[in-house]
Length: 587
Image: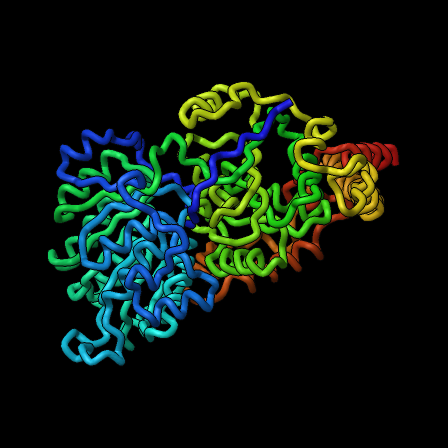
């Protein structure tokens, strides 16, 4: 039986795209020696005495910010926040490194808010009014929205204006807000550069720039955009990078754009950076049985909200639709959805209107929702970092959670690499089906539970479905076509008879002797061009009509008309013609 592995608890909490634009550069963490060689001073938890019960007020945070946070139930800082505030509040450049779900947003959000000047402050007249004072860059829309929400909560009493800028929506609202004046801008790189190129976004007065989830931003290929944004800001700015890992690209960026930065590590090592107090289960499962497994997990005794992560957008949509068909309140969340639909799905998930969110990795860095009891990896994650960020959606703020990974038989080797990188005790996933006893025991599922809340629709065979949808109509149309075919056959016989009669008359005329000469003399012919006589005096229609009348009156009986036959091929017509001809000759 697969045993749950619970990581050591630590006082900690925080924050498409399945974007296919990611670079292939390795994101392996650099060693501590390389960080020191880059001129970056490192501060770890072992070097800082964490005071139990300390509050934000004790750390010198502005009273108005503390009051706003206390209204939201936030009184005591977490490790990354306590370690960062003392450095960031004095304007020092820093690289904050902590596992996902550990409160990094407030770690940089509080210094940004405290060092910004509100419109009610006496010093506001000394700065450029209405121009952004701080810029926070996030890799995804969901994360940008989440960061803005946290900043608005903390700055409610300060009166600072926070604007969120991202793509997928119209420009007009964002441009109007910038023209009206803002203090802090949170956005994604693409839309920020678009507005800067339009000369609407002025970053020349920014005193602080933050790159949230910087490692993810570089992995997604945003490095050129980030460097362009950095060049648009003053060199005297404070620069803060927050990341779960420390790849070489982060170190290179720090060397080029930061001044004597300090690396603050709120964890001993990344290898042990799985989310605190999260029970992890790894099952070897068949793809066709996975929806049934998830349906039964949703009925476990401790199941609340669940996030199911998929590898592709199409898979996310399919699984969400199948869960809805099974009677569960589910919604997809992926990059093909309109931004309004994505926000609506997240809001419903936060408000407990839906129980399951089926998402791609576009949401792995942006969902900060309380009450998520389960995270399910529908397929094996791509690598250990993706695994850590996905399961970081549960067990947040020191709470407990359950992370379940369903590994396909073809992905066992990939999982073993993740298991080794994170030093987990799940080298051999246990083969599991929706009916396995250990699944019921591990997850607290009541015996006899099925993966449906409503009965499955009755199965209808393809033949029955076709008959129900249009069999009668097709039969009626076939009969009608048959009737028309009979009519055509009859008409063909009539035409054949007429042609045969003409042939017989022609032959009879030849046998009876030579044709009698016309009484009116030789026939007059007139050359025409486009219906007009060649000499231009009279239309051709009149002589032709006159000649035809005379010829018709003087033609001897039995003489055939000088007209070309149109030969017909086919059963009914040919048969009719042959019969008609024979009858004429006999007569």
